[in-house]
Length: 267
Image 1 (cartoon, rainbow, N blue to C red):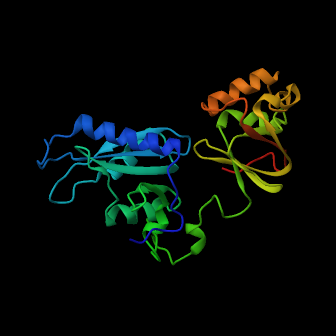
Image 2: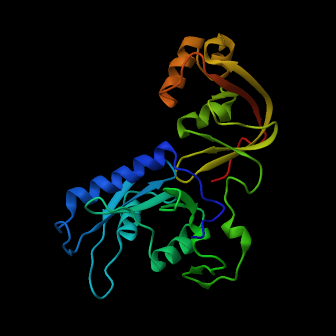
Image 3: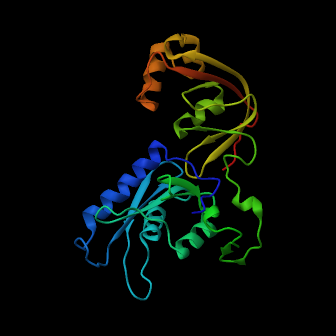
């Protein structure tokens, strides 16, 4: 089986998305084991701001919508505009099911850098939507677009490295109140960077990573906390525990210092 190069193991958010799709179809299928039904597939989609939306398919011989398209419609109805990841799960424990050809074309047309969770010989993997349709052309309401490789680039690898932030930190970073971020198993590199705030739409600030210090969680200082807009090292450790529930005092983290180059941002 061909597995695209963008395939990677699922992260915790993607595993939660799979579980939402499974719970949705288990709760709402109309078919018993080994029976046909109208609602046999569940799907869940994660928006740029990490909200999750679910849907079930509506089978009909004229081409009733797949669960993935129902979930995308539900997300749009709740104000989501950019999608991060999508998955479909079959009823009665059938597990993750890859999208059909029509769904793949829809993903490539509207969300080419969205990730799609698919089954592979190595287990579930997250894959760029564009990689599910090699050499495809994108359709838009204005017509067909020629093959433009830039449209299919993974935003994680196209351009300066990305450091992702929760949108609640945007104003502190913009104002200069937050000039450091502490990360666990999330490496950065010195030099130009893009700070991406996962609102909907996303906001991107251009920045320069000016320093990276490796230290134990227990060695974080009050100065580290104050550079993040907090007060004490204990407060910083408590905040980190919220982001990384399994974090221990003996774990090593990276304290990343940065300087904003563009305070206006781009949506």
